[in-house]
Image (cartoon, rainbow over all chains, first blue to last red):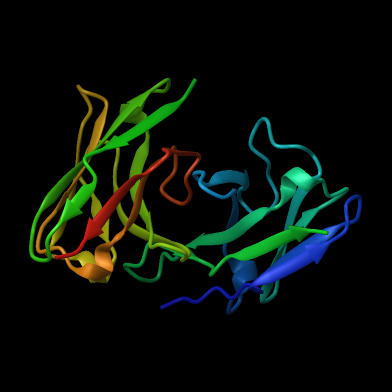
Length: 109
Length: 118
């Protein structure tokens, strides 16, 4: 089955740019979606279809996808961005419909 | 405002059964794919099951096939997950989620905790 690999943690100072990667075999051929989950809360969709933002999500959140790596970029990081971030794809080649990455803990220093 | 409210979680013994419900409001329920996603304590997200708008297609992760059944009642704007033969490894927060397409979830509920233990 398809596997998505994320770094367990990323740290960044306030005001800087955070980049969270999601690796997968030829992931550039798939659409990647990103969720933010704060402690004790439900996930929230922050980027869909590689680089689109749902209404209400700040422009500071952006995404890209090429080759074997998709990236969620958070510009001008704020303390409130501290959360776990998960990438997800739809694996149409198997019965495992949704595949999630293991998650990345973003720490704002 | 979109709302998804799960209920039905609790403590159950191994081998037991539980039925989760998800009440939807604030959107046209019958137009959305619906899903269950779970998260074991301290772990990541795991997709459990999807169901098409009219209930004609259902998909499950291998680990729950034959034990869990997803269903929906569009007249009641409700989603269900019947869980039988529960195991300790099914212990998790179960989230209800929705999306216009089957490929991702636009909205999520707050989750309901299922604990399988003797």
